[in-house]
Image 1 (cartoon, rainbow, N blue to C red):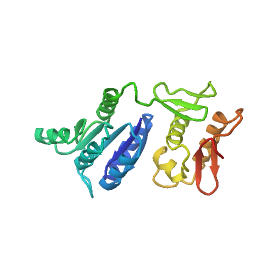
Image 2 (tube, rainbow, N blue to C red):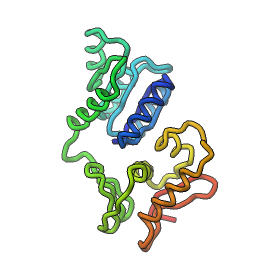
Image 3 (cartoon, rainbow, N blue to C red):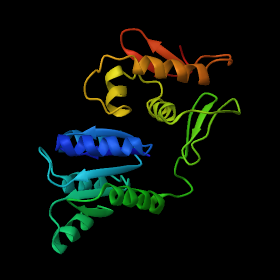
Image 4 (cartoon, rainbow, N blue to C red):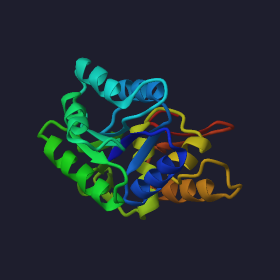
Length: 225
């Protein structure tokens, strides 16, 4: 799943991002309500995890504006406010579920899975493609020109992120934060190594390379050079 986490508590955000990434999901993070609303309006997400109390714009107003704009992406509200009236307000604002802090990560993960199943339908995209390369989000199978390609979990997560940002330059910082959950450069060659391994699997032996290095900027998954 591609998840947007809107949470201003950096420690909580790091904990959630790490756990969700380790569970095989791609996580984008916004640290305040304005950034969160902008990303939710303009991004392609399977689910939103929204803290209720946020700087600049509170979580429930984000959800109300998304619903008014016609966005139906499932939203899980996180809040320390756990009274019945608080939960009712969260659901009436357009939230699909409401989880009271403190919570167990396993319960949050189970609720996200349930919301995804509830919101899935025949028209929901389950396939990411660039050219003849495709990733099935349900089975996690990768194929190029009909040939199945076996990837390790981190390679699969890296490919999903690149596919979701196809034709865009993805920087090292973006990869470190969203795939490895590093909010600093650990000065290792982890990205270079994983990109090299992924490139050898999805490009080697095929007529046209899809994974390009953009010198001084990052990487781009695209049919064009």
